[in-house]
Image (cartoon, rainbow, N blue to C red; front, side, top):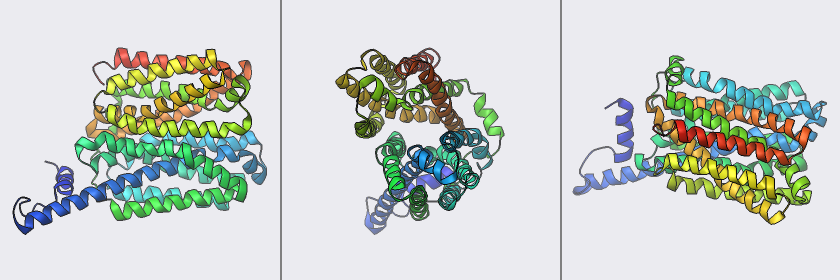
Length: 417
């Protein structure tokens, strides 16, 4: 047994002194085991808060673009690069930086990432010009890609193996929670108190995650090779390339449609602009439910979950294209969309983690690169469609991406998943 496996076993079973069934030593061992398990779950919750923080930070400028543009004397389009440039930087650097930091103890790597995250957001809060603000965003983006690459692999090491999928769903629940609370609250704070204050708030969140990691997370020795050769190793894995391809397809389709869901609801469905925020909140709540429901299903039927979610998401997109003019239909499909989409990161991340367990973080870094790249590709393609044909056809295009992801999973992922 490796040293890291021994350390993990010690955390799960106590210090090994005494017999749990007899005497005082056994009672102490059981109590130590319970304390370690509780501490591990607190660390998992801390990772979920980290996901919430990073997702909120990534999308924070979206609702504040006019104010940021005015405050830094640039156009709204230029200010929008604070989002698309962030995603591009995270996509490009996730894999190489994760490989190069592969030999660091994972606890102390997380500490370093949260220090960078916190410093970057505080830098953004004091930025008076666009150049410094963009630099601050790039600093946070460098930490973003690495954090996403290691968060789930760390979470599954903190809990017993039978709870791995549950820990994954808890960590990735931070995505849905950010949609429900993080981005809307950040936008509200920025609009009422100034966009700089919004960056201060997410910086404080980073400090809370940092404190949780320091207090609750045990030392976690690195398991990967800690070199760029790890990337070459995982890139040779055919099944992993399939999983990354499925991720790129389905996430491109999602962001192609979701980026323009507000104009779709206004122009096609006829929803008043004042109700868009409430409907997006409904989407986020549905996503939160779907995320944790996925934790109960994915572990038992991974491939079926992927095929089912991608196929049903394609159906939802087609129904929104054909019947979007009806408010009840559009709202019902929006709820289904939230439920299905939130289950996908849990299933995809679990698939990736299972394929190359000896280099799970290097494999996850490719998943993160595909995910963040899909944000840029999807929103770009969606923008072209909206400019040429309006918001309704983006739903049909998103459905085509979902069908492609389903077919790729069905045909090429049969044995691997």
